[in-house]
Length: 134
Image 1 (cartoon, one colour):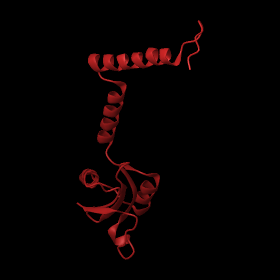
Image 2 (tube, rainbow, N blue to C red; image 1 turned 60 degrees about the vertical axis):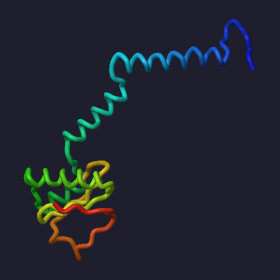
Image 3 (cartoon, one colour; image 1 turned 135 degrees about the vertical axis):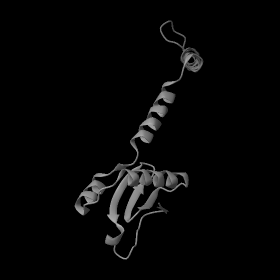
């Protein structure tokens, strides 16, 4: 239904006006440079890779309570184990580094909890879907 009035545009006129403009503006960003979405994606990837694994508040408290200090080598191996788990499609991973056990939320790149292997009761880990031994 078209209502013709000098003050209002028809639906077809609005579509032509706005959809054609948005298509043209997309083409101009593609031809002249990179889009905002590309910049956002690149920044997010750079931030994640530069930052490495993060520790949740719970995990940081556990490390502190248990007197666990990680060396640079152990941190690098924890990061490598997290990357390997991600490559295999694991979401919640047990990563074993030396005598330390870490539960890592792989999509968020976050250590959820940490402990010495000797402190674990019966060596049972739950709520994981994979393990990486480094």
